[in-house]
Amino acid sequence: MLLLAVPLGVIIGLSLGALGGGGSILTVPALVYLLDQDPRGAITSSLLIVGVTSLIGLIPHARAGRVRMGQGLLFGLLGTAGSFAGSRLSVRVSPSVLLAAFAVLMLFVAALMIRQSIRSAPVSQKEGEGSGVEVQRSMVRLRPFACDCRQVAKVLATATAVGLLTGFFGVGGGFALVPALVLVLGFPMPVAVGTSLLVIAVNSATALAARVQVAAELDWVLISIFTAAAVVGSLLGSRVAGRVSPRRLSQVFAGLLVLVALYTGVHSALALL
Image (cartoon, rainbow, N blue to C red; front, side, top):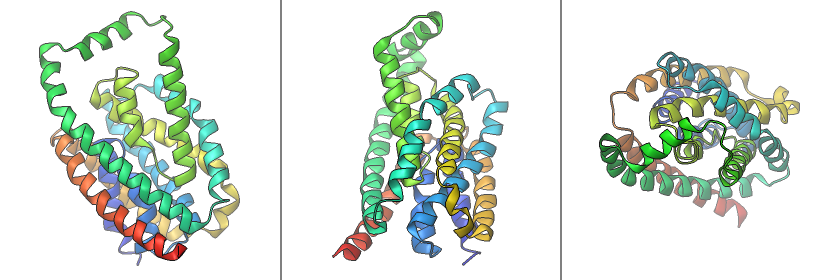
């Protein structure tokens, strides 16, 4: 059982390091169905694993200049209310209902990742020619003190929503963070990936603070092995990020998410009957 945590941790860490998110959404199903953990305990364990892995995984991104510390910390702090609320709400929901909702979330994330991967190719081609997206990014940099109320509202809503997902499901929320940082704040994709790891670490720490009472019930040996493997995977993933097409990685990972979502959905639906 403990040996199985090693390859699972590496796979999830690899996704976090390479894509800045997505992989953490597999942590809860892996802990529940493959490592025999209680759903609520699995969510808390997932927050620990994802938080530590993201924090260490952002180091090589930071060294490469792909992390904006100030903006990342601010985005994470804006999501603390949602993260805390999600954690408090999660403990009041039936484990079977929680897993059924989680299956729906995984299908949504898979669809989102496929859509982004399809759209990423033409965007990347235009970027080389000076696309409108680059112009918008330049405008953001040239007007650091301009106040766009609609954009501020989008940032606040996105940060709160990501925090809510982190607290309720024990996921990092990177699948929503990366596109938000690119589209709302105008970050280049590599910088969005690196900065998202910082936001995930902040959100995970907040959600854990609301679940501190269940710490004594956790399998700390399993968490330690899983986290160590995930950290190794995230460091490998940060290297993969510069060599392998994120578009291809997203498509493969989305397919895996669909399979896990279907299994989780069927299993939880049968438990509810």
